[in-house]
Length: 351
Image 1 (cartoon, rainbow, N blue to C red):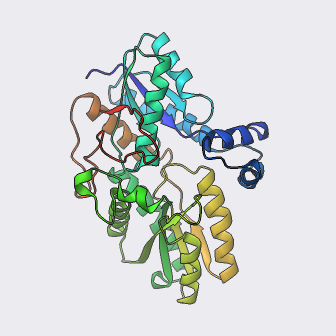
Image 2 (image 1 turned 120 degrees about the vertical axis):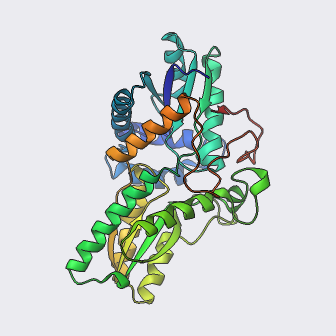
């Protein structure tokens, strides 16, 4: 396949107080969630002036990725579309078609395999293609195996460990908590290809692979644990645990003096990182008397963006990259991966 455009696809977010409730209604469409419950979440956005940081971060990623691609000789126009807010994905598709492009490679801002983190984006792309049926859009595979993603976390964790050692907190008194978005247990179990499914799905396996790579890169071993955040489902449905706040409370009981939270499940510091970690998890740590630090996500780290650009170039040039974390399922992306449990929907094909 010869591609003539790149499409960055993201979740979206409000950029004013007036956009908050319409945004939340779009995100939860079809789930019959009353406005009273949405209003609770809306307060998180209002505390930030009604502006989610995600769109600003994507604008910067768009600019940096365009520059990196140019530096390695990939001359493709880069577009951006959101699932839940402007710039709407369907509108961006129309723009791409109007600019007379035909074959599009899509990169999502989600790096792991699961229905909500991968296939749902592909479904949204397929639905948006109805506005520009002349386009052929293929999606890149999950890219959490990029060594530079883990390296950014290793570097900032090491820096924080050094800062605390200078202030009298030894490494054996620290717990590193790696976090990602909780999803239903059933969604994890069906992440990845059917042939690889068991009690632990690719979603959890991939995060553990990244966590292990981060720890291996540190100069000294450190206590660590994978935890989950931002649960939003009904209490009757099992979701991945333990919750990051429960892990912090347990750490205090065990005599841990400080925790470093590393949100490996996210590539940018959007609202769920800022609110659920910097606000709620930090408050939990303060309440139980544990020092707290949260290291940044890769975002627009130059080495991470350069690695993304190289991965894009490899796909464009027909070189399917070997996964950097074997056994974690990075090589799989097909029509049978990460199924939609609620409905049958068309999905964009993987590249």
